[in-house]
Image (cartoon, rainbow, N blue to C red; front, side, top):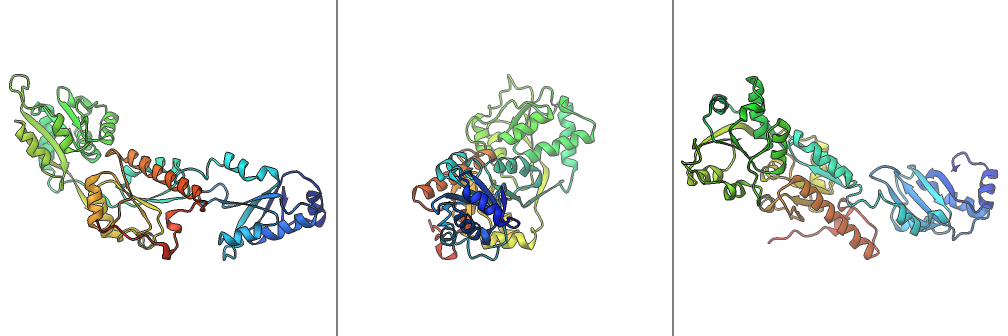
Length: 397
């Protein structure tokens, strides 16, 4: 191991005379000088050399060259000359730095979303597990709350419904979001109740996150849509009211103030009475800092994940439209349609309406993009590294 800043002539002479692997700590603009020292001391100019900047971080980048070609390689890669020439660099010299071995051992840089800055516009509480998953793919998630959840303006309706749960007013309760579970749970805690209050009541849930939130509360859903995780999917599996088998004909539906009426109308068609109760309000969050807004509009993000139509509308409303180099990933057709209505090109669609499947789909997209670049012999770059002159035109279809 050689620190180029303090290495003496004797040190360079010793490592130059050796044929062992040498690790040189230097700076970006001094790499070629260090390579020259080793050649002068006796190393062959065709000795393999790899140069890594920002090592161990998600901004890590590595170039493979030889002692004789390293300056030219960095110049061709447009790394030098650079205003950041003083950045620390680790250079590995010798056969162990050869490209074939490096490709075999480079597990971190080859992650599908390595170094991607991914915007996660969600409510703050719901973003954590998604951000963890993105980090596992090598990405750098940036959470921007676009929706704030607040209690209903008039809580009396919700209070009556929760009391009705305890007194046997309902046959079913249907949860269509994690926030609905949270709102009911908070009311339970306010009244000193727990999951036992659901005894004798059938529970329905839309979406895996909603089902998980119920299970964490101690309630296993009786009905989760077998197909599409939506109000329509729930209605397909919901049983019609049968006066012989169903002693009570009423359903409690705690929902957001802006939820659609699809589920209510469908349940009424199946013979049920519905208490459609506003459990929480969704309001637009405050705008993110100016730096984040500029990154969104200027192409500083590599991808953005949209998990609902409201996250599209709210992000554009509080921060502006993402730049056209940014990869747009949507959780389903309705969200994609809203994105397209706002002039965005949808690049990735989740195969299922699940935030984790959406992150998987983005990782698959990144992996294919990386493979295509390698196959074409091009450097692997992030979407935000596209040159302004190489912008893609948006589809108008």
